[in-house]
Length: 303
Image 1 (spheres, rainbow, N blue to C red):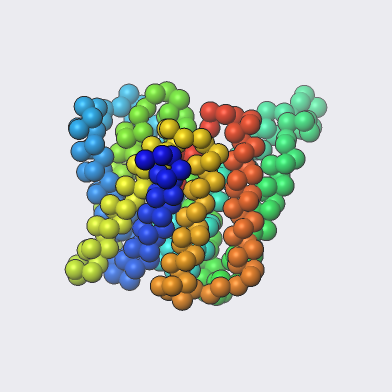
Image 2: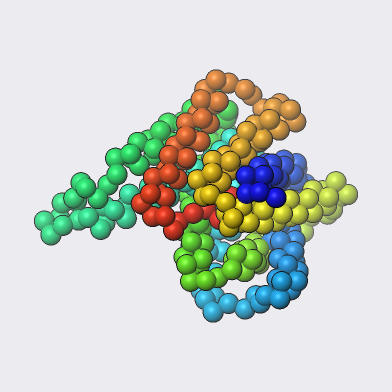
């Protein structure tokens, strides 16, 4: 399968996973969903590694630990938002990771460009990145205002923070890739971290009984997320990074369609305009980052 087809399929599977998470939230808290998502992912990747003759042993456990900490925190917040916000809204906020990465890039440029007088050198900051960030946050304001009630504000903040943490996780994934860690090993330790944190939350909050519907949704969440992650990783390995990043945003469109058809999510021009601004800002930030630091690329949507 070609890289574009892999990306479209992965975006569709991630959006479908979002539907399963939203439905599963009626039966389980976010931490428990994260546990089963991680357990299924870890078992799946362990089987893939064994079939390929690879090893799960890593020489850099602390790097994987940090990637898992921020990645799992992002995942928990995202699942929390998915259960309480319109589907497309939660997806859009998580997809802001490209804009957050642009902010991190600007922050790094500011720190590096400070001269001896204590004044920042203006040439260290790309004004176009600043514009993409501003447009992205204008888009957030448009998305959140028409599609959330006042009592949902915290869920929107959770979704926003999940995108920021996802950006930090992507940076760590990039660092792991640069030292030669294979993708399946990165995904495995992330899944293991998800399983561990989810198990801890279950110890604190107690176990919830299963129904056939609830259990089926948990299994579907794990299989869909892991399959989509593998497809997206493969697409980035064989395809063009910017094309992949563009197609990745189809996940928002799929989620919007699901939300309208299955959950009666509201359709407003402000929300649609906000989503378009966030997508455009994310693509612009990806393009500018690729020109400034060609080695950096998103390895997956899910952190």
